[in-house]
Image 1 (cartoon, rainbow, N blue to C red):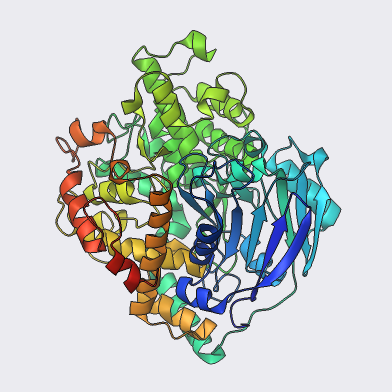
Image 2 (tube, rainbow, N blue to C red):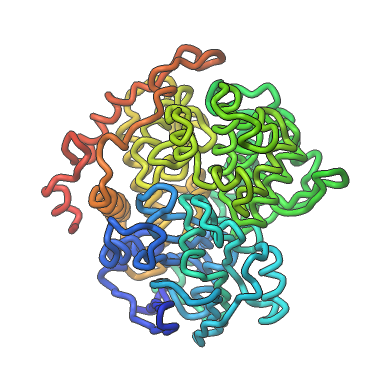
Length: 600
């Protein structure tokens, strides 16, 4: 197996400080594509679903897809697959930047971490030469400091993933960071790496990748590139304003969650919008490897208490550190974003957990004395202070580090947690976008916007326009989107590419790159296979239909005002149809017939 894949994986036994190389299984690669899919298959085969996520027996897999590192536009992604400390469910966190391609150039498609190192450790892969090195002097240091130090020690041409103090301190939503600001952010994958005492992975490679059909692959890449450049979202909107172009759009639709989902519109939205970011703090765009879109924002806050420079904020971040906590001060929200990157925190869960705490304060359940400082909606200074405490588990940050579900339960108000399967919601109120409610409820990794992204069809009208306030057809489209995004993640492509291309283009890229005879049907079947495998892992871990639900606020409290006024989410009718169309029983379990059809 040489085309597109490197053809080998690296196993790292941290207990014994040993590494070994294994050939990639061609048959499994064919069935599960790579990346998210292949890593999930290996993980499901090797890890007890009932393991504690922070136990040495839990494994963590870093996995590139077959298109990662090739000439495929937007082919830069890698996945971190493990059991999530935040959720207890399968965790599969996606990241871009440069690390994924360089992992393959250095000689591996996947890295499987097992056990726990006796001391802080870094893994160094230099053109296939593998070494575990002590890293006690890096423990406790920020992501920026670690990357700068390792560049000095190893060379500027190395690429890294690392954890910050949040991962070391086992914050349940700690992220794995690369390029100082690109995050495999959700579900606490950074805490798993921290529990294994792995501070960083450094890779350098000069290897190349070949396509099975070079001429066909080149033609397909050029076709995809043209469509990306001509797409309204990928060719104009994202390059000009980044993902935060959505702030005003979602706010106008009344689905921009404000004050912990108490309202759907934020009066200060314009002050934190993509347009304002571009006008006031943007310094330049930044692209991942092989990406023509360049949606990343390099920004700078000049002067004052929030001064700093870094990447972001993106849409989900500016919501979580803005509207969710009632902060319209762009400088404060951006500073909180920089802190998350440096400490290694998922910005979505961090901001949403603080928002939950703020509502507990607002309702008189949580006091300033318990927190140690005022923590109220709209207070940017308190936001920044809380973020620093979370990453280092200092003061009340130790409580916030457990996530919103555990925080709300601790203070006897579990209904104030806004999320699914203990993972906090991203930046869309499903009372204003009903299909998102079904997507959130059924996501295998907990509340998630990139396991389908119904916003595309309900708000943006891509690939077709659906009424966001009706349930008709939402189950079927959710399933199609979920299967497609599983295939996209597994291929190593960026999900944003699907604003301009679809399954036909992705199947053509995979076919010409790998030599496997993919067509649209087989591509989507592979995505369905991956989705069902994740579902099986969660069922064996103890999840059931009762976990495929939404908070009472979204089910029973009508949206108070705006375009979605009076709306709640009629989840049950969508969920029943979803299970039926999935080929699952009424409790959400795949039937034997479905599993047989998927070769599971």
